[in-house]
Amino acid sequence: MKTTRRDFLATAALAGGSAALLPLSARAATSTRRPDYTPLDLALKQPVLKREYFPAPVIIETLELLRDRDNFICRVRSKDGAEGISLGHPFISKQGYPLFTHALQRQFIGQDARDLDHLIYLATERNVKIQGVPLCVQIATIEFAILDLLGNLARRPVRELIGDLLHPEISIYLGHLLSEMRRLPPEESLVLLAKDQRETQAKALKLRAGRGDNLASDIDNAPGRTEKLIRLAREKFGPAMTLMIDGNGSYSVQEAIRIGRILEEQKYYFYEEPLPWDWYEDQKIVADTLAIKMAGGEEEFSLRNFRWLIAHDAFDILQPDLFYFGGMIRTMQVARMAAVAGKTIAPHMSGGGLGYVYLMNFVPSCPNAERFHEFKMSETTDANGTLVPIQSKGEPFTCVDGILKAPTGTGLGLTIDPAYVRTHRPVAV
Image (cartoon, rainbow, N blue to C red; front, side, top):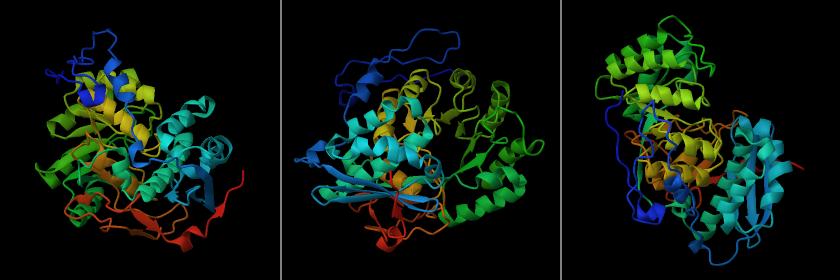
């Protein structure tokens, strides 16, 4: 059991007052007391987008979804001629794109982009019958394009529109090789990981536990593979390397705890999603039992579910995915709730497309960003397998000595080759 917990204070900046805040919950399995949600709700009420940069209305005139086979681009233009552009999710966009044209497009056209906080809220809450990750992916795609437009209009990086520059450098952890980590013998997968670690000089690495089936099957791809991987990685990379592991919902409570004990013995930094993602109360049992930091939330699409997870102390590190959860504004709201409770944010990064660029725009302004953030080797391949031709408006988007620099260019900080965009055609309603 964890024997000590942090006491948390609500700051005036977040809660609008200076009253001391008692712990939202103590990790006591016998406690049935309802947490006090008041400080979290106060944090949620604070606006995210900085409207002061836009003295006049910014009316959205067109909002287009462009398609080339399996790949999608969102392009938004305002009545005063500003433009923003974003790339859709590399695989979920194909399943969910009708949600863009049939449920979302009309909710944004003709609206003032300065009201983006409220527009995103309405897009998620009004569509109660179709809520889920596919809807949120479309909302995020729209939001990224609108933020790009607003940043270009204000001549500021997106990070300045949603917060202050708190982290000009982003320390990465390698979170790729998902299938290799489970399919190959531990010795072979660690050779591949070591190669990429040498290239990036990452100071933190994430492995994969179990089958990763989100079924709590307690099955490994080979007997004892996970235990061997955990120990071999520590032996190979040494005590100075920060190691973490992702279960992707592989385990039941009992098996999650057994694996967790091995991780504690090997001094791993965090244990991500050992149980299926929506086993909330079971996750709390595991968190209450183990001392290792618990991380999760990548599949979550509900703001109120994050509210519950934070208040009930189910995770130490919250991992909303900027795509799956519906964008930077909603993720910043989770970050602010987590900050009240003394917790940190390490957004999950969707592989492929421009996932790492969106993460680079969010993390620098996140007040309670984690020590390390997910990186998947600068993947810029679109859903068709085509390399996305982008150019940074500032420093190159490269990892040097385990560090990514916050984008300095206006908007999302990049330009997509217009010739590439022209290969995509508007999707009709």
